[in-house]
Length: 181
Image 1 (tube, rainbow, N blue to C red):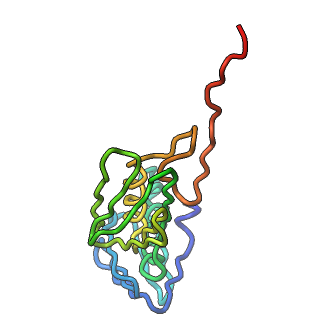
Image 2 (cartoon, rainbow, N blue to C red):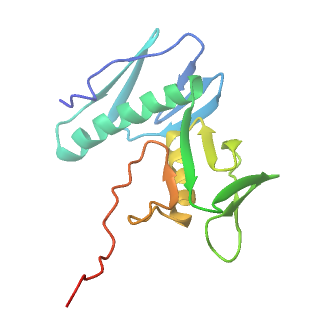
Image 3 (cartoon, one colour):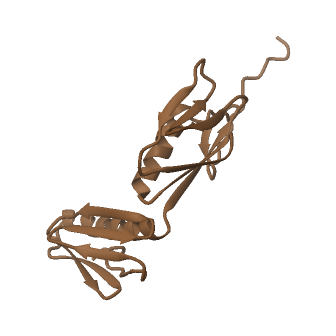
């Protein structure tokens, strides 16, 4: 049995869960999330505990067992606490500012880049070189952060670019000039 899949998920009191045939809806103070799942995986709700089981032991179901349990746990965390990612803009002139539902990103190109903020994502700008992305879906928050980081990945020589706040950039040594030949 899957080590992750067999763990029980505890549901907070402010969360409402509805399980239909092969879909689950989770509602909480930060919003509502839904997911469809394979019918060979069974999700059981007992008072404030959720257990995920499978009805066979083939490879595909073993993989899905832990996956659905992790996705369900992330849905519950998302509607109660939410998820966030922080990006830092490192480099001279690298800035970000919010214009209505767009981000105006200056990342060393000859032109600014406009990035449209998705509807389910919230953006905070503590300063013009820091961007905090918040939302209730872990996947959506991570996707938006990855797309923004993709605009200008950090380079290994000077460390310039858009990086996650907890990311460490391993710097390389540049070219050296020969002394005498």
